[in-house]
Figure 1 (tube, rainbow, N blue to C red):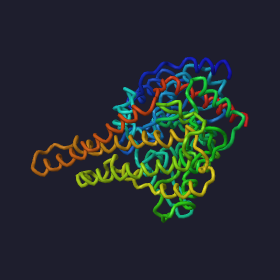
Figure 2: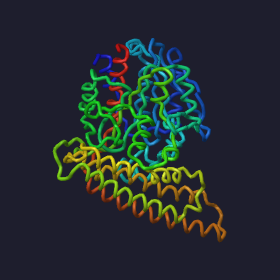
Figure 3: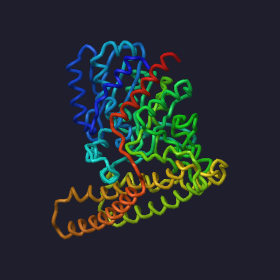
Figure 4: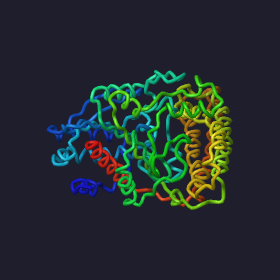
Length: 461
């Protein structure tokens, strides 16, 4: 690592909280005003709620890179990396020359969704507070999964305004390097890459090791992930999801997938762009990196997880049924929960683990932990959205008539059922998981260092 990059990484502030959309927009405008010689700002479009989407252009190097935060609105680690990196780029001409890139930076792509996560952005960072105030949209409302695609029987063209804005930006600037700044909630560090770059895998892992954040060595995010090296995977697009469901799922493929593909696919198709994702956790438990054998077969660990998920999904659907008639069709929490609980992939996974010999081996401690407890953490997030689906309607109520009182009583009943289940699961996980909260500075450092490594690599390859 070059000294100028070491200095950059050493200067990362000890951030204690995440920024809101308004705070980032204000910061970006101020940066362009203070550094007109190196920074410009322009609007690429608007969100569905009418928020302006801004892009910073910094530098004038011979290579072109696009970086965006919040492709999912519950994933703001990248926004803090971009907040820091954009400021340092603007201030440091030597850094800009050394990198030799023209940088296009969108700090918060799903700005509407980030606003629905604002109640946890300032902390406290606990499993309860994060999940209670969490929001993630349904797949067909995710800005990074509504790029148009025609593949076999999948024909998706219902592109969101935010997605259209990013498409036009990619068409215009034709980036060589796209850094899609996702992050996980719980676990360890892992990567997705458009193509193999084995020369820098060890350096990427060292970036995590130096910050004492473990690699994620449990189950991959999806059963069809292609692992190129420990914690390093081939980029995911909707084609892989489709092929997996087609092979293992007993479903009508015209109805099985309701979203489009992602920016990595679009960038590759349009201009051959290379995309990197560095996935990072807010919370981790050391068991996520324990490769010693457990007391259960990997197949059985997965099947136990699926059984628990099915039971949990039934609870969510039954609780929604209590008050659903009083919810708006466009209630974002309702849309998300309907999509997440109607996922058809469970049966496909059951068939896959029976047929795949890799799942008939003894599970590692990491795999057992991932299936048994990390999966419950992610379901806790759905329980939080179940509370919020009812809360969303209660907060809008103003009338006091008899019908309104009945509506309020029904919504409150479902709210209280969801709140009880959420609190009980949160308390259980607080007891069962020995987790640490990763400082934001460490997460920014890992994400930035991996981006620098890849930017340098792509210049030479």
